[in-house]
View 1 (cartoon, rainbow, N blue to C red):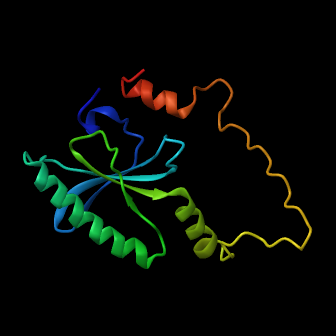
View 2: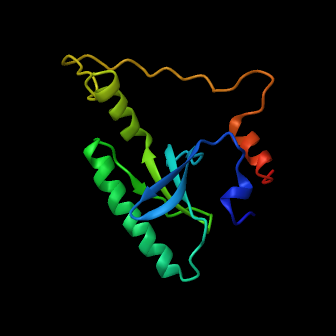
Length: 151
């Protein structure tokens, strides 16, 4: 398994130089493939990895504090990614429900609450969504894993 994110991801992943909590890092965006933690990943890539794990944790705490404040002001939730496998990354996750609420309230100007049902009326059955695959193309998860050399 690879130890550095720079070696594992293709160039299709958006990345930007950022300064946060006094640290100059590269921010990469990705999506979480874990079905129990769906959301948008924010991966802060360090150029120089601290040798002392306490320094890395201090940096993660400083970044997390600033992110909590900024994303909280926007009405978004953000969580620390405790399962991040890369030594050179401080990872956070914007949970999918938080992103969805933000889009409904801010972009579409709707009510994020579920529509109310009349007394005695059953909610309509949820339709099964089609798989997000294009015929003839491999699924994104498998493609990313193949490119990263995991498959």
